[in-house]
Length: 157
Length: 146
Image (cartoon, rainbow over all chains, first blue to last red; front, side):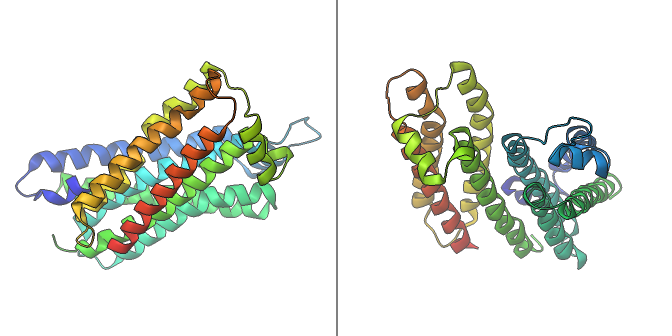
């Protein structure tokens, strides 16, 4: 973040291009992360429930807590870095907008909520799977929208 | 810089994320030592008396991502101390370097157990506790600086 803060964008095309590159990379990362989680946990409620709680009729064992916790541990790490970078660039470019502060808060809260709720869903009920699904998809879409906004500003300033 | 105060928000959230990463990491470690079949105190006792055997392959599997991840998380957290006007650069430097050293010690501690250089798992518990303690110290310093 310190590197993003220092240079004046008008006088350094390099930092502007670097920000553009990382925003594009993170935009695609977020899209692929949605697909990857679909493959790991399931693309619909039925398959997500089967992964978390098992399915006696189809002889599917529930996911091991070690495996799920490792996924959550990695998710927290990846979301921390991706959100930090997206937010730092967004604040740099749109600090004058009133909505920036709220967007940053919402993105961080949803990004933190998603993995925590997944663990909660594993130990409690399928109700939390809906909360996880909503928060997970929402934070990804919001982060993609923010990076797309940054890309647009950096390209057509 | 137009609105530097806005940058306090990501820094504050980063501290919460780091705490969650630390908590899930400790939970994962305890699970690998048999937390599923006994309580926390029983698991800690088990680690001290007879830690689970780990092959060199398993050690590398755990150590490799952690070398990268812990290094970058420490860098991310500690580099914000550069913005601090309340804590001296000397203290920041000392705590940051200490944290990197403890992370390295923590990651490699299981090697001593894998190669039977120590029988007890106290070395892993000690390194983990020191690392978490100093990390909490950095988090407290950053919170104070915000």
